[in-house]
Image (spheres, rainbow, N blue to C red):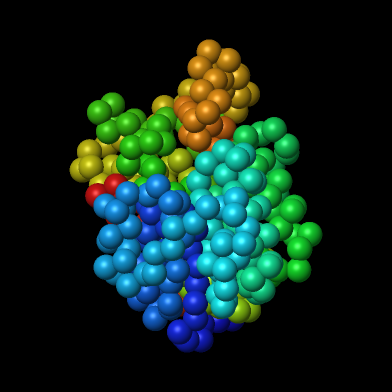
Length: 301
């Protein structure tokens, strides 16, 4: 059964407003006639806030540790959407500040900054960044606020550059483990559109799972061959155990503890997906039928 959201001039607050995903979410909310308050840190340059203000969002500079002023910024909102990105100080710390202010302001709904695979299906320690999301989710679920997490697998956009799977110069798709393991991919634009629809949907459940395309490594091989007009071949580098060993070595040599996405973190995410453990089921793609899903082939060009 599909759910068509009821379009009203709801007030939605977006934290992490100047990030790429936050900006896309705001654009989608405005297109749905929402009144958008965009939270930005006080030192955010005008060059980043001006486009949001021009689009129609109300820019609100905040100090997340000032509970009084943050609570006032959230007053009269129907939902707080977090698109904050960072390590523990942000994912757990700043989001906790945002949650407390939302509770104080009487905001009925909260969408945390998840946008990932199903971290509740993963063992502790298998992914540093997702461990932080699980930690915050457990705190969130101990409050009376109505929370909705958007789980979208991997951002398809990363296949063009950051995710080292498709190698156009070598005409190869590399992988570890099973080439037939289904994985979930969703573009940032589709994720933003779905998040905006969910923010305006008072009946949205605790978890919403989406995938612009469910694809195996073999599917990625075919998509790359079609997109680039040349034949890509598969290159299996070993099993998941070998990938885990590589992650451990790289994390030891180049820990980069203060980076949000060091190379080993991306490899952890890939290991998770190739294991099949965090596969999203069932998918809620049909909940907002106006969204047109983008496939891997389209992203690769």
